[in-house]
Image (cartoon, rainbow, N blue to C red):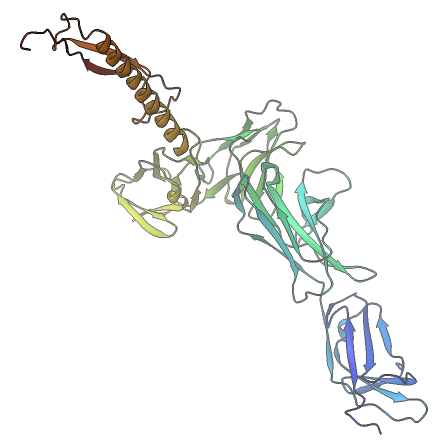
Length: 472
């Protein structure tokens, strides 16, 4: 018998020790010895000899749960029948169909120009996978269908042409654009023949922009609505309304055209809670609007908050609205990100000057009628007004011109004084005023910048130095 320290058998499994039903799996027995290759092999599963397996490696073309277990092996040299030390046990685990999981970082709601990464991984396994990403698109023939557990079609997906990754399960959009708004899934595969995972659960990307090619107009214009109420949505502002549709992604995971679609308009006569979701305009060419959150509530209280982003510096009023009759006591608590912000007896809260720090999740609560759902308030940076550098340059130019003109007039006055020093008619009380007008191309509101009609006066006093004057 060969010594245990000289020859040790080692079992390896490819593609991984964690595999899924239907995959092809190869097991190999290697000996920690060089030179002599005249070996035969014995395989054991759960400590029982497999009499039909005598080769160094073997492949199970389509594994099932019954193939799972602890595998060991041993080598025997042909010419003297001496055996190696038996290997350590390696456990093969066979699971149900592989499941891909998709995540988004840093978040699903983004501003145009931001960077976002979609990450895909396979639950319980990380070896040898190739990943692909898909996006839900308008229906056309030949697309893959995504169905729910009951077999209902949720949406159709199209492979992103540049999404295939041989190594690493991440797909980055940088910079994110309006046409990236939508619903995404991923899938992984490995082996030959390929074993594919199921499609991942969906993740959404909602991109807001400064100048979208279309705007989704909602009436009544608020994020929250009472059930049984009505709602009208339309795509407006686009140069060509052809091919524009109102799309929605509801909490059930379904992507669909809005009901009762006529052209680019959607009318919902009676709302119900399952219509809660994100709505946006989408054209056949991929153009889109800012996505908008719509919440349908079955309770007595909703929050009246804007559907579109609020601009920094604007004033904003949030109100508690009540189903049917308004209570005699309107006192309501207003919350931001789960923390009490204000208590108002009027049932409304005013933010006089909105800033980026006001962005967050808001809801209101009435002591008797209950509380509203939460809604996200988005704040957009102001695009008007000069930058600090513009103000500094404008002020600097204005001041420089004023000083230059003032010095020119002063020098001319002194020269004039020198040439006429013998003229006794020039009295000490004589005063010459020079009018200096400065113009400024800046049209902002900064008080530090002089207006075109501002006038600077410089006073030049002329004295007579005639040696024949009185008193000398």
